[in-house]
Length: 297
Ligand SMILES: [Zn+2]
Image 1 (cartoon, rainbow, N blue to C red):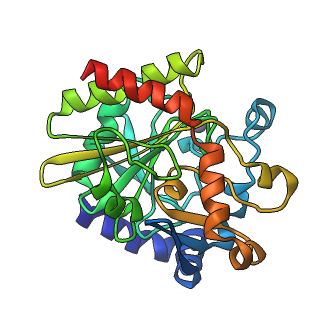
Image 2 (tube, rainbow, N blue to C red):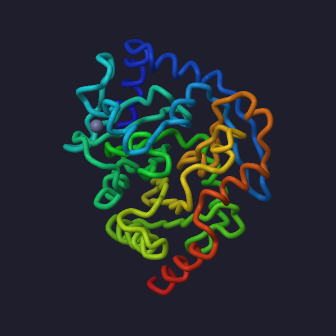
């Protein structure tokens, strides 16, 4: 699959100007390393992310626009690679990381993780050296109305180094609340991820899906999944116009996207740590889920 994806990128970069421009934009992107306590974040200045960072995802705006993930609305040059009967892999024309892919469902159906954890794990298996992500409909997905995942190279994947410090389900003292779930058994992985999501829904008293971002990778027969339970969508600094940032799975994994140069210059490690704390689930609720998970183990 990796060779096929490599070939897809080569074909698409020459056939599809929008992708060529995105790949070029990523090559030019400046990256700055910021240390926060014991972990590291890479702040990346990517101007072409501005429309995703500021995307209107309220119901009205979504209903008014044509869905950009539906096959019928794709640019004529865009070519996909079939992964399964349901999922097709495309090159993401607004990349944050190398080999940035969007994997979409063939049907226009809501962004929901229930029933789709297995598909995510299977994608991780055929994409060694990559991570697969899911952004919930109210926390990062710019198409909350069309089921999709993203994937990308793990060459730069700061959280992976940090997870050496994982204790049980969590990363202590991390500044962002995250569950780390690892295992070799596909159905046990699905059960654990789904159980954590159910507990989150219960603790946050949310009907339907709790706000969540997920990242997963597969290496030497083992999956590692990171679940970031969210407390809110965008930080206050976004609302006030102080910083144009809207963190989703990739940011929470440690590649923090800023579309504007002025933010790239001024944002500090302390700002990022505060944003992580602000948008992930508050400690008290997080600890409640951790306790429930540990009882159920
Ligand atoms: Zn659609």
